[in-house]
Length: 197
Image (tube, rainbow, N blue to C red; front, side, top):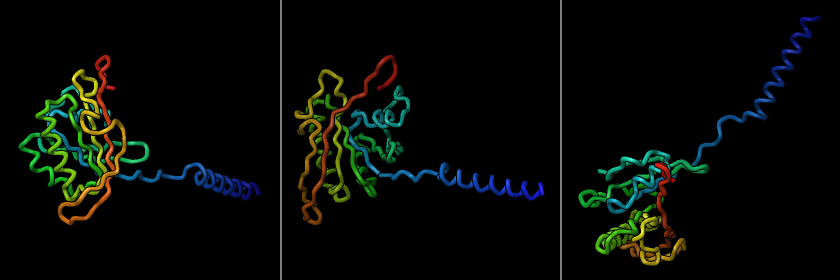
């Protein structure tokens, strides 16, 4: 008789454990969606520093990107796979080879740059906006280095601070009109006591 009670007790424990696991331990959380972005801008605009900071990496010994780098930037609800393309003249001509599969574009602009460099950045931005693989994608334009005294405001860069624009663009290849969302935002990395903020 005690053997029958012992067996019944074991079955009850297994049942209770199964119910507990079903209710409390639902298994792995669903995977976060991943989005592929391309990050472009001239050399020295702060692309690598910005992405390194977003990935909680050290930003002390960062040099210009040669070619490209890919970083996974984790957020609570998504992961951004960002292809950062170097901004040197010898590399810019290859940017379009890395546009395929992108779902958004981040253009980083040094807001302290000279008028000549700002004009070059405008040319590169305009070229990217018109590219057939990017012409319908959302664009984020970051006016970086806002902590420096010579920084231009977003109005001086050409947009209103943090205003979202819906623009109509003509795809140069298909002559179709498309709508695109563009956000211009200022940013900078604050250094306090040797740590970046």
